[in-house]
Image (cartoon, rainbow, N blue to C red):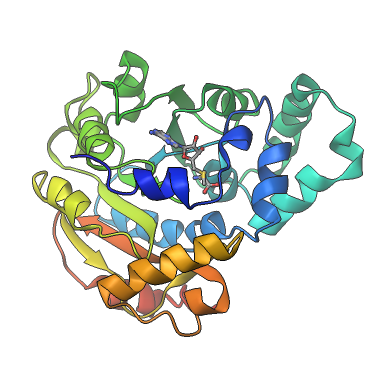
Length: 299
Ligand SMILES: C[S@@+](CC[C@H](N)C(=O)[O-])C[C@H]1O[C@@H](n2cnc3c(N)ncnc32)[C@H](O)[C@@H]1O
């Protein structure tokens, strides 16, 4: 159950700890934007296709976003906005002089004016308490709580809020969170106090972007115990962000070499690339077919 990527996080990966838990998201977008971080943009395009499939079989439009940070995925899924819109907003001079409280108030108005009409509930969990609090105050998350499910049991708040979710999403979080987080998150969804309908007896779908040197098999094994079959999209990978320095690049190239993964045109060209893993109760159309037919991968 020990997270094998903790060493990479601490020793050779760029460290973003100081921007993960600020009182507002400006520093996060500045630091991640400087390295062209793109993971939530891929989620913005792909998660809605999965949600519409889930809904077509009677599942709820309800997402549990693990490692939700400042509500980035909620911002993109619930509003007519792209990741570039968020980068532009949080770098804007007009907002630079606002206090965190003033920004939360301005954001609540901004997001309300961009809200999509289709109903979607997003519940967030992240170990960064200030980030989750901001996402709640800005109206991005329908519910959320500070949770480190690697180390602790879920709070009662998460148990109640996540219960019955149809989709679990993760962008930029696999490697920080590992088997225990998935185990505990699924137990909230399936066994939570408000279980009923879809959530009572069916595990949710789980869609996670994980950088390519991560061996997802241990997480897939946890999900399999909940009756979920995991597939990796084989038709494309997803540029996640540029390496910050040669140390990161060399470490990743060594890991890929050991795993027999060809980095040509991807990591070798200076970018982390992620795979998309989709875990579902029953595999009908393979994920390549499901997403390929939707046209959503063509960008
Ligand atoms: C790269 S950010 C990704 C945030 C967001 N999903 C996105 O794509 O913009 C990684 C997030 O993982 C969170 N995180 C790190 N370790 C965690 C843990 N053990 N449990 C929950 N969240 C954690 C951090 O606080 C941070 O918000």
